Image 1: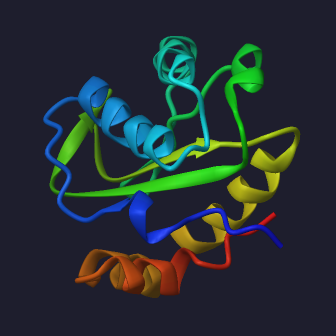
Image 2: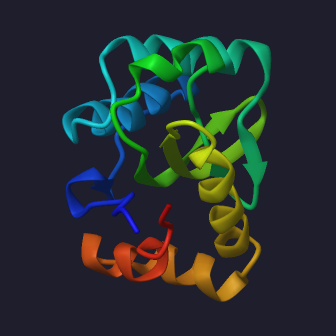
Amino acid sequence: MAEVLTSEAVLLGGSARSKEEAIDEAGRLLLASGAVEESYLAAMHERETSVSTYMGNGLAIPHGTNEAKSAIRRTAISFVRYAEPVDWNGQPAEFVVGIAGAGDDHLTVLSRLAEVFTDDDEIARLRAAATADEVLGVLGDVQV
Protein backbone atom coordinates (compact mmCIF):
# COMPACT_ATOMS: atom_id res chain seq x y z
CA MET A 1 0.00 0.00 0.00
CA ALA A 2 1.44 3.34 -1.04
CA GLU A 3 1.04 6.45 1.08
CA VAL A 4 -1.27 8.81 -0.80
CA LEU A 5 -1.51 11.71 1.67
CA THR A 6 1.44 13.10 3.60
CA SER A 7 1.43 15.77 6.28
CA GLU A 8 3.27 18.13 3.91
CA ALA A 9 0.27 18.04 1.57
CA VAL A 10 -2.17 19.16 4.29
CA LEU A 11 -3.08 22.83 4.67
CA LEU A 12 -5.52 23.63 7.47
CA GLY A 13 -5.75 27.35 6.79
CA GLY A 14 -6.33 27.75 3.09
CA SER A 15 -6.14 31.35 1.88
CA ALA A 16 -7.92 31.07 -1.48
CA ARG A 17 -10.93 33.31 -2.01
CA SER A 18 -12.03 31.86 -5.34
CA LYS A 19 -12.44 28.45 -6.93
CA GLU A 20 -9.50 29.14 -9.25
CA GLU A 21 -7.24 30.09 -6.33
CA ALA A 22 -8.36 26.98 -4.43
CA ILE A 23 -7.47 24.75 -7.39
CA ASP A 24 -4.04 26.43 -7.48
CA GLU A 25 -3.59 25.94 -3.74
CA ALA A 26 -4.45 22.22 -3.88
CA GLY A 27 -2.39 21.76 -7.05
CA ARG A 28 0.70 23.46 -5.62
CA LEU A 29 0.64 21.01 -2.69
CA LEU A 30 0.61 18.09 -5.15
CA LEU A 31 3.47 19.71 -7.06
CA ALA A 32 5.51 20.39 -3.91
CA SER A 33 5.09 16.76 -2.82
CA GLY A 34 6.62 15.62 -6.11
CA ALA A 35 3.47 13.78 -7.19
CA VAL A 36 2.88 15.79 -10.37
CA GLU A 37 4.65 17.88 -12.95
CA GLU A 38 3.76 21.56 -13.17
CA SER A 39 1.65 21.04 -16.32
CA TYR A 40 -0.84 19.06 -14.21
CA LEU A 41 -2.03 22.27 -12.51
CA ALA A 42 -3.27 23.69 -15.83
CA ALA A 43 -5.04 20.38 -16.48
CA MET A 44 -6.84 20.71 -13.13
CA HIS A 45 -8.26 24.04 -14.31
CA GLU A 46 -9.11 22.56 -17.70
CA ARG A 47 -11.08 19.72 -16.05
CA GLU A 48 -13.06 22.24 -14.04
CA THR A 49 -14.18 24.04 -17.21
CA SER A 50 -15.74 20.84 -18.56
CA VAL A 51 -17.34 19.52 -15.36
CA SER A 52 -17.60 20.82 -11.81
CA THR A 53 -15.62 18.83 -9.27
CA TYR A 54 -17.85 19.93 -6.39
CA MET A 55 -19.15 16.75 -4.73
CA GLY A 56 -21.44 18.01 -1.95
CA ASN A 57 -21.01 18.06 1.84
CA GLY A 58 -18.56 20.95 1.47
CA LEU A 59 -16.13 18.90 -0.65
CA ALA A 60 -14.54 19.73 -4.00
CA ILE A 61 -12.07 17.33 -5.61
CA PRO A 62 -10.17 19.12 -8.37
CA HIS A 63 -8.13 16.82 -10.57
CA GLY A 64 -6.59 16.85 -14.03
CA THR A 65 -7.89 15.65 -17.35
CA ASN A 66 -7.28 12.15 -18.69
CA GLU A 67 -4.85 13.67 -21.18
CA ALA A 68 -2.74 14.90 -18.24
CA LYS A 69 -2.15 11.41 -16.79
CA SER A 70 1.43 11.49 -18.12
CA ALA A 71 2.12 14.47 -15.81
CA ILE A 72 1.40 12.32 -12.73
CA ARG A 73 4.52 10.84 -11.14
CA ARG A 74 2.68 8.96 -8.39
CA THR A 75 -0.82 8.78 -6.95
CA ALA A 76 -1.38 11.41 -4.28
CA ILE A 77 -3.93 13.73 -2.76
CA SER A 78 -3.67 17.12 -1.12
CA PHE A 79 -6.04 18.46 1.53
CA VAL A 80 -6.96 22.10 2.07
CA ARG A 81 -9.50 23.31 4.63
CA TYR A 82 -11.07 26.77 4.53
CA ALA A 83 -12.47 28.65 7.53
CA GLU A 84 -14.55 30.65 5.04
CA PRO A 85 -15.83 28.25 2.37
CA VAL A 86 -14.87 29.01 -1.21
CA ASP A 87 -17.68 29.61 -3.71
CA TRP A 88 -17.61 26.62 -6.05
CA ASN A 89 -20.19 27.43 -8.73
CA GLY A 90 -22.63 28.59 -6.08
CA GLN A 91 -21.79 25.81 -3.60
CA PRO A 92 -19.68 26.24 -0.44
CA ALA A 93 -16.41 24.27 -0.58
CA GLU A 94 -14.95 24.00 2.90
CA PHE A 95 -12.64 21.12 1.95
CA VAL A 96 -10.66 20.95 -1.29
CA VAL A 97 -8.92 17.66 -1.99
CA GLY A 98 -6.61 17.74 -4.99
CA ILE A 99 -6.30 14.35 -6.66
CA ALA A 100 -3.56 12.95 -8.85
CA GLY A 101 -4.44 9.36 -9.73
CA ALA A 102 -1.95 7.33 -11.75
CA GLY A 103 -3.59 4.74 -13.99
CA ASP A 104 -6.95 3.77 -12.47
CA ASP A 105 -5.89 4.67 -8.92
CA HIS A 106 -8.26 7.64 -8.94
CA LEU A 107 -11.22 5.25 -8.66
CA THR A 108 -9.87 3.77 -5.43
CA VAL A 109 -9.11 7.24 -4.04
CA LEU A 110 -12.58 8.55 -4.97
CA SER A 111 -14.25 5.55 -3.35
CA ARG A 112 -12.46 6.12 -0.03
CA LEU A 113 -13.12 9.87 -0.10
CA ALA A 114 -16.81 9.17 -0.71
CA GLU A 115 -16.87 6.96 2.40
CA VAL A 116 -15.32 9.71 4.53
CA PHE A 117 -17.42 12.57 3.21
CA THR A 118 -20.74 10.75 3.65
CA ASP A 119 -19.96 10.17 7.34
CA ASP A 120 -20.95 13.19 9.45
CA ASP A 121 -18.60 12.13 12.28
CA GLU A 122 -15.62 11.98 9.93
CA ILE A 123 -16.51 15.38 8.44
CA ALA A 124 -16.71 16.78 11.98
CA ARG A 125 -13.27 15.33 12.75
CA LEU A 126 -11.81 17.01 9.65
CA ARG A 127 -13.52 20.29 10.56
CA ALA A 128 -12.10 20.15 14.11
CA ALA A 129 -8.60 18.92 13.19
CA ALA A 130 -5.90 21.16 14.67
CA THR A 131 -2.92 19.37 13.09
CA ALA A 132 -2.01 17.60 9.86
CA ASP A 133 -1.65 14.39 11.87
CA GLU A 134 -5.31 14.62 12.89
CA VAL A 135 -6.28 14.92 9.21
CA LEU A 136 -4.08 11.89 8.46
CA GLY A 137 -5.98 10.06 11.19
CA VAL A 138 -9.14 10.47 9.11
CA LEU A 139 -7.76 10.30 5.57
CA GLY A 140 -4.61 8.29 6.17
CA ASP A 141 -6.07 5.04 4.93
CA VAL A 142 -6.82 6.50 1.52
CA GLN A 143 -4.31 4.16 -0.09
CA VAL A 144 -3.75 2.36 -3.37
